[in-house]
Image 1 (tube, rainbow, N blue to C red):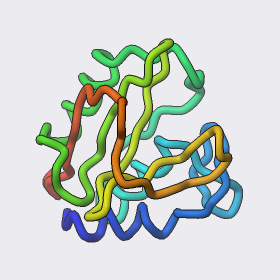
Image 2 (image 1 turned 30 degrees about the horizontal axis):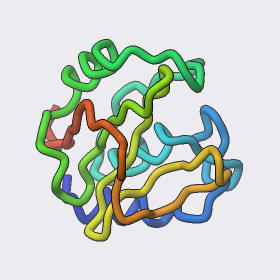
Image 3 (image 1 turned 180 degrees about the horizontal axis):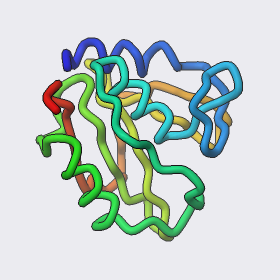
Length: 132
């Protein structure tokens, strides 16, 4: 996948409403919806989890699922999918852009781009290689 394609797909969602389990920008997306849009822009067609809670995810289990479908990376390139541990059992996806990250902000109730992930603990980063 071209990182530019993934980052552009994520940026196209900026301003969309937040909706837990959302995958359609016209109805709202969540953080996984943003990540899936970036991956789909590059041709990834893998299965997407649903029915998960806002809190209580297991980083190791999610990481293992992503490892099976994507390539681990340093998370520095536009289009990379990032997984953060925000504390209190809340995991959060974002997509790297040239200017920072795009993510679905539940508190703001919309998708935003911000300059970085200040104070968020990065637990993994993945890139779609366009293979498989």
